[in-house]
Image (cartoon, rainbow, N blue to C red):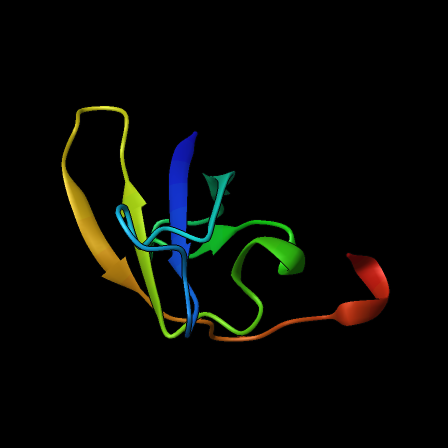
Length: 67
């Protein structure tokens, strides 16, 4: 399980974080699955892993019909 923070243009002042959600690491390449509404429209995405480390992420693919 990972925590996802998405920052959208015009995010609230202070934290800058507009949306948080969770996801799962789907394969050995590090692809992460989450709901589209968590990351849609984000200008940046940060993923935090269970060990506390974090990294930037980007949307590789989406399926709006499955959100």
